[in-house]
Length: 373
Image (tube, rainbow, N blue to C red; front, side, top):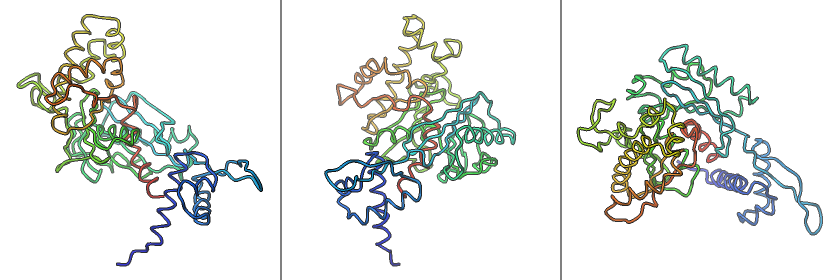
């Protein structure tokens, strides 16, 4: 089979130009020549293509020392968008993200999960409402990612373990019956982890812990999810931290899930995680005891991960968003357990403080698009 190298070179140069404009925002042709050392005719040809596709814009001129002013080209961040959903037991959250990965719209509503046609129709209606509110043309929508608390087959089509929502066997086809766009199902922790890798591209290898009402995890090696032989990698919520300890919904005892679920904290404050941390900050003795136990159990899990993977560990989810004032305390606990290091600087807080799952479910469409221009 003969490969057309000319086409590959054209695509390579086009992508380099586009990526440079994404990074620098505003550049003239001569700026691009200096940055990339590509010929002016090649740059002109590719800029014309990107202009035609409405991915960049001609945004004025910049003065020079003689002759005509140079045209300036700018990257259009909302030329395309993707939609992400976060499905939980009692809520549906939708976000719209642009080509920067920035969330430009959030719609969160209380809605009990059901495996019913009216529920799936509601998902379609919510998405259409968001599109209408933002006045987005269908041609701009790259796809819809649906983040769910379950294990998903490699082809992103089927939930093969969904005990949390009791939806094992549910399919993408059912979820998207009323969604007329390309779509994928994504494990919620993997989605949240992907949002973090996107936000911090210098991170190559990491373990992401989602500290939400359920505990999830995602392993990233070389900027890619390591899913494991059976798509079950990263299920940190079900490592045993206390042998024969508290019962877990999975049927086992002593799982991290039973000790570090966000709901355990919220349940001590009338179901409000925000109120828990407000009272903790105010010195409430009961909350201090609960929090000390929480951090102690979490430090066990973090140290175990560090021993296994020797990589950065990122804390996200509902609790991760509140961790900033407590990260130093947690690091001390983790460091005290570490056999080889006297610090825990490898532990850090997530960049996406809110809606990481929904954003991360949408971002694979953004990532694929910008890498294939």
